[in-house]
Image (cartoon, rainbow, N blue to C red):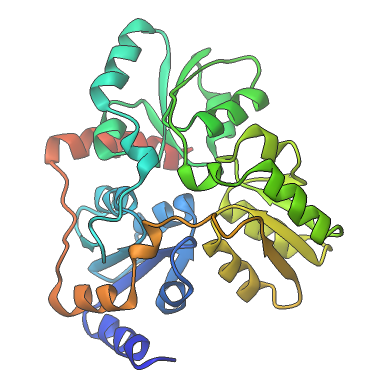
Length: 302
């Protein structure tokens, strides 16, 4: 353990702080976190009444810290790097969503948690990649406006064919850098490996996958599978968690290009600074927060 990591572990106890880290953050960030997970797991942890710490340090991108602040208004939520944004989240605008809703008044607005708090506030319900199919299938509305990820939305549409899904044209640049030619090359190099794919990928990747799921679902599948080798079509930070949790198995990236530059803005130096100085407090306008919180709580209620 580095001196920096040791100082963080000591200081988080002194400051009564909980460190949450998404599995796309750098390995050294994951290793000092109290809890690592995907969007749904982190959302649940943020809202967990048994968490006694009065401060949450959220290592991820900004919309995730916003979600934690929405779900834990009684706590202080900080982020190591406030400029760690999400390009997909920025592809959706609340006013534009309202305009589309006006064109389809009978549709439910279903919003991926990878979105801004303003977009969540004009949504009927939020979803994550692990529960999107289940939630859309259970909604009473036949027509769905799915915001902002067209790839996840298309995957949901294929699983729930009785619904009309109107896709917002957003996407994850990191997952869209995973090309079919890269996957075919990885399969040629590791012919016995199963392919695990995130639904943020393009359809030509999903069509070649042995398993499709959220990061948390991929972790569970890899742990329970009898297979010993896996090709992971997702952000490469996930490989660290998979290897740590399954030391007897091998995990291969599809391409070194599958890296989210915003997740990598989380560093130990910035994390230590937040703990020492309590900088980068995440705040949300109260009126917007109440509306956005309702959409998230509807998801967690399901």
